[in-house]
Image 1: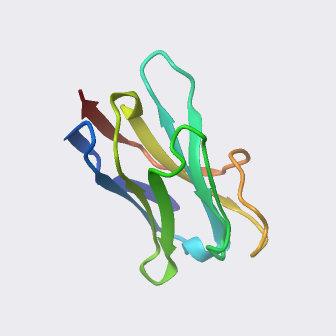
Image 2: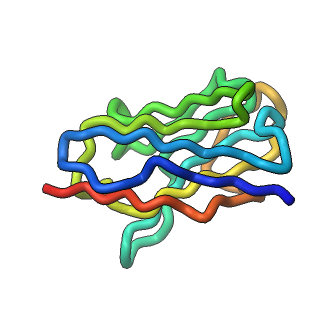
Amino acid sequence: QLQLVESGGGLVQGGGSLRLSCAASGFTLDHYAIGWFRQAPGKEREGVSCISRAGTSTNYADSVKGRFTVSRDNAKNTVYLQMNSLKPEDTAIYYCAARKMALFRLCMFSGYDYWGQGTQVTVSS
């Protein structure tokens, strides 16, 4: 069974950091581009960051550029989202998702096939 599991969420003060992990089971992540998404209460889900299969291409929402960094360790079958300088408006449930793509194709925020269950991130002011 193909499964993605997020971890690393929690409660943090504004200005703090968290690192989210997205671990895969039942398949190998190196065949997939990975996206990070978030959904805050009363808001639509939005793309936060993504990373290509090869890890050579990344993309970020304007709201997180310069603060968040996505990376992958295919040997560990895990993708990470390092979140620094967190703000209260970053509060949301964060999801990772996977989609098959050509090795060096640029990642994007659409077309994902597999989703994790989400992890809550709460940033206090």
